[in-house]
Image (tube, rainbow, N blue to C red; front, side, top):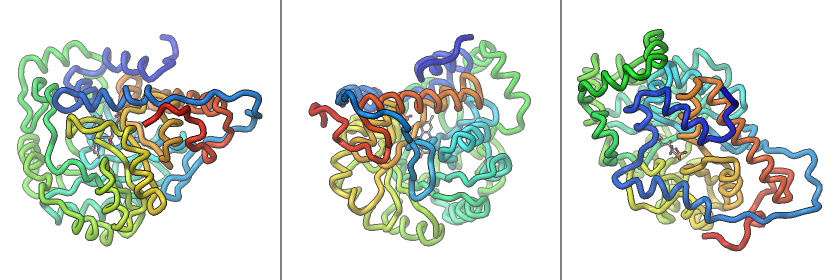
Length: 381
Ligand SMILES: Cc1cc2nc3c(=O)[nH]c(=O)nc-3n(C[C@H](O)[C@H](O)[C@H](O)COP(=O)(O)O)c2cc1C
């Protein structure tokens, strides 16, 4: 099989290997998927300035995100059920990220647990927290992330209730899951995935089962999950979590200047301009179209990160040019993982690094930390 050249190549391969319900879970947005599509499409509206006859030798993509070194300004975003794209997916992705020198963020709703990921990595990873109504469970999760020496907590703010994703509902990927003959057929057409999955014991929510009260099997887990996201989450809770955690704190899911100002006041270390990859409020603005407005509002007070719609290194450069200190990729690495396991995650990172490096050079820059809006042509948001 030829080497994948683009993230789209990885997506094609993932579609072939991963059962439809789990592939769709990654490749889906809320309702009409308008915001999901806009996240990708709006990048094409940002144009680059072609420069010539500038020295392009000795280029560097290295940077820091919340003070921690990264070989390029890209981290792996937290994604739930990552271990359903590929068995032990979170452990494989974390190892790939560690070898590549970029941060890996483990989701609360992961298949492999915090302890599983810690057992296969030697450098600290980041942990993403969903705030559940059961605050004792939340406090315990924070303590487990501390014990695993996670070096940043990513607190997700944009999922107090779950957005409606039609593909998931049609596929019966809901809480509780509705198992039908279609699932059997979907699995039957993906024998390699099934054989791999039989080799692992990790098939439930590793951070929850055995830790949350009254959750022992899949059906109690499903109802617990459905009920537990806290619709009353408030800025006061952020203060409590910040204090309990005591380390680097990143607030994820900011898409509005007013919210960005409130976030900056919390004393957190960074915000992520994000609409959850178009999976929550359909009809919201694309992430990239809001980035420079939010940077203008709070960029002098708090580090601004970005995610949503990045499918190439060019997109990373555009986000950095519009003021993001760092970016995150979700689906690009999930497609790599689904397609090929750990080498697929590495392939996704390599694709993005190569594109970022070449684009930066052709825009006349040698150091990612010197990239600013001067690399952009005048057509922009
Ligand atoms: C399959 C999938 C699962 C996700 N699960 C989570 C999650 O558990 N926690 C979270 O904060 N964000 C989650 N997200 C959102 C990502 O962290 C990130 O914001 C988004 O994927 C960025 O957009 P991109 O996929 O276009 O790169 C998920 C995204 C996807 C695609």
